[in-house]
Length: 299
Image (cartoon, rainbow, N blue to C red; front, side, top):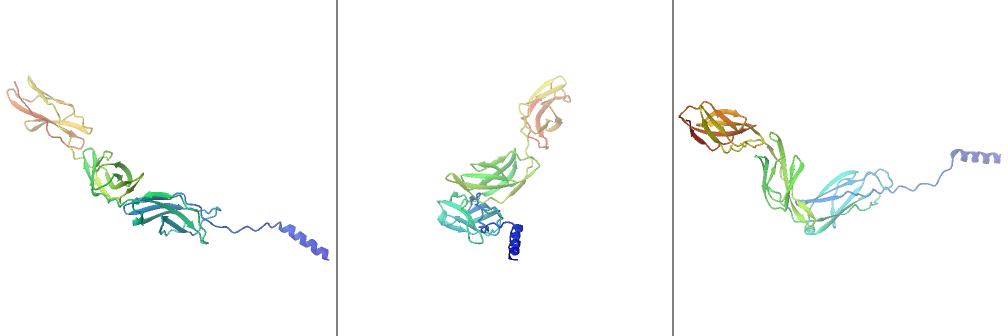
């Protein structure tokens, strides 16, 4: 009977299979953050990084605590879950004029830390003032931007996207199309070693680019009298939005729409004195001033 029990026990072990050594508990240490960025904007330091979604053992990250530091100054962060994190911290007095190292690491629920992130070094400068009097107005050739205030340079944004960087106040946006509306912002920046610190952006200013600017007046008007006609000619307009010319005689419109830089007056009477001038009109109906007038007496 005893042999039967031994045999049954042996068969039970074979049926269940071999049980290996127990696995150690997972440490759940979050992976290292590798994309920390730091930028000074006005009197604030703006930081951005991503909390990884995996641990070093390739397990999902659950709740974590963020330890973010600028030099010896802890920067509070409320985020606890994986994803992109943005944080801000006022520039403290002990940072000014110094190169400060920013770094971040994560702590899990058991108190275990990840490795420190990539280190970002920033030269911290006194507050850069936001540009004053920022304005956008339609101008000949585009939209003119004007402002005042100190800075080593300025960054211009149109509809939220970078447009240009300049090293002196004032900019003409020649890419602004007539009839379209745009929103502009501006920030000043100051050099900080090989880096730079930016001001707060200005409030957006909106403008619709309207062409109310006339073309240049035609030049070199020549008037020659012949039998029963007076021949006029002048230099061709080179305006990109030119449409046609107007011919004037004695202050009155003689021909409202002339396509070429020449005209024949067949209505002039013999023995009379006339004064001629010419203007140019663009595609939007803007008319130039009149050319230099020319006086002639018909034979």
